[in-house]
Amino acid sequence: MDFRLVDLSADEIAAQLAVVEPLTESVRALIDAVIRTEVPDDDLDDARRRIDAVTASLRAAQKPGSYGVPFTRDFTGMPWGNAAVGVRNAIAPPLRVDHHDDGTATARVRLGAAYEGPAGLVHGGISAMLLDQMLGEAASVGNGTPCFTGTLTVKYLRPTPLGDVDLRARTTGSEGRKVFVRAELCDADGPTVTAEGIMVSPRNLPSPDQIAKLRAATAADHDA
Ligand SMILES: CCCCCCCCCCCC(=O)SCCNC(=O)CCNC(=O)[C@H](O)C(C)(C)COP(=O)(O)OP(=O)(O)OC[C@H]1O[C@@H](n2cnc3c(N)ncnc32)[C@H](O)[C@@H]1OP(=O)(O)O
Image (cartoon, rainbow, N blue to C red; front, side, top):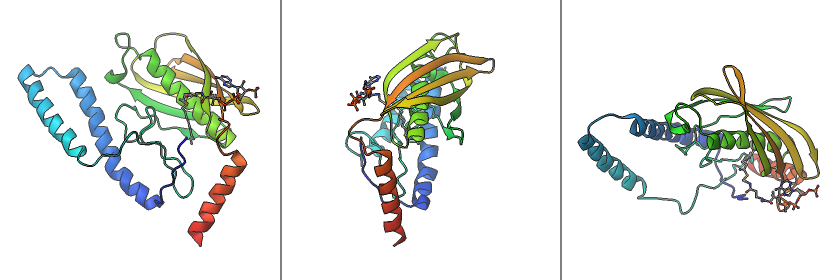
């Protein structure tokens, strides 16, 4: 787990997001357009050349490896490359997860043509990924430390049509470093996929107490 700290204020992060989120949204629109376009082949070839030129311009200054999960000075994670929630990742729908006082995590997301499995239906792997993220978020926030998926059990109750889906997760208990979590993915008529997870806080991570102390120390440094 990457605990790299970045010295960015909330304003600086907001300024980055203001540029990055629209760019990623444009790439998502591009993905959808490539899937559904019916323009002639010559136009496709021309589009490819122009896209390659944009890609080359972005690669002029490029981070090695992946984005990782840097932490801000108030110890907030920035999982911007994450496949499910990443604001820099055009493959992510992205899921925007809300955490509630009762310990549940919820999200609503529109799954378009890029997430198709069977015709007109959400790919089962995408449903599993989104549910996995929800389980991890509910477990991690409830536990106060990041939890990895140990065991994930997914049950597909009925097909999920592409379109708007709602997700909800809640922890059902914990035992040592294990957190037990349940989640469901619903269309307008109710649950289509359910999941159960045993999420484990890895042994080499700081404990929730240590993280709370780190967060307090970082805040105190910043105030000084
Ligand atoms: C705001 C947003 C915040 C942040 C939100 C973050 C959300 C992230 C969501 C994404 C979730 C992912 O995709 S995570 C990526 C996919 N998952 C992974 O790559 C995990 C790969 N596996 C591992 O790293 C490891 O095997 C771990 C962490 C699962 C366990 O390793 P460990 O830490 O050494 O654990 P260990 O001491 O062996 O075991 C501790 C206890 O857990 C149990 N245990 C161990 N492995 C498993 C297992 N696979 N399934 C069930 N239970 C297990 C043991 O029996 C033991 O129980 P007992 O004897 O105490 O009873």
